[in-house]
Image (tube, rainbow, N blue to C red; front, top):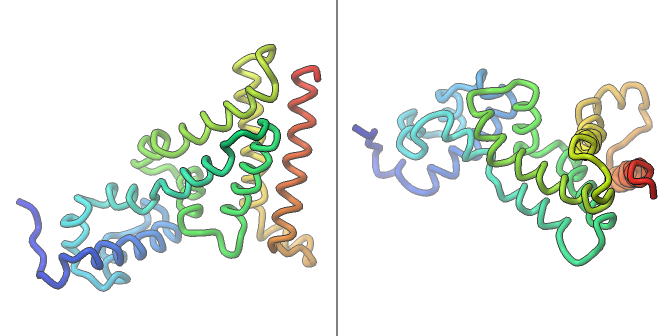
Amino acid sequence: MSARLPETESSECTRDRLLVAAREVFAESGFKGATVREICRRAGVNVAAVNYHFNGKEALFMAALELEPLENMIASSCGPDNAEVRLGRFIHEFMLRLMNGCCTPHSQLIMRELLEPSPALDSIAKEIMIPLHRHLTGLVREIVGDRVSDAEVRRHVFSLLGQCSYYRNTREMNRLMYPELAYDAQEIEATAKHITEFSLAGLKQAAGK
C-alpha cells in the first residue's frame, strides 16, 4: 500500500524540494551517510514523501543525479569538427563542471560515488559512466586510428579522465601549496587547454603520427 500524503505535500513543488535537498545531503554525506529524515527535514516535507514520489532512497538518489548535465556535456563535443577539436571541447566542458565555483552538487555526487560506491553504483555505471566512456572512446579512436589496440585506447581514456579528476580531487591541497592559485574561468580554461595539448601529443605519438 503506497503512502498517502496530505494534499499540500503531493504537488510537483514537493518533488522539486526533495530533489534540491537530496542533492545537498547526498553530496555532503554520500549515499550511505545520507538519511531520508535529513533530506525531508531540509525539504520541509513529511518523511513519507520520499516513498510517495520516488519509491525509496536509491530511486531518489538516481533522480538527484539527473542525466541532463551528462547529455549536455556529450552534445558539446559532437558536431562536424575534427576529433581533436571536439576532444578539446569535451575536456573544457568537463573541467568547467568539475571546477567552476563550488563544484555543483551533481558533480559532487558523481565524484563521491566513485570514491565511496553505494548500492546505486551499478545504475550510475549504466546511466552515466558507460555513455561517458563510450563517447570519449569514440573521440580517442578517431584520433589514433585503427592501429592502436582497444586496450591502449581504454588506457588513453582512463588517462584523460584521470588528469581532469586530479584537479578536482586535489584542489584544496593545491591551494595550500600554491596560495596564488585561483580556479577562476581563466585558470580553468588554461588548465583544460594544457590537458588537451598534453593528451593530443601523447595520442599522436601512440598512433605514430
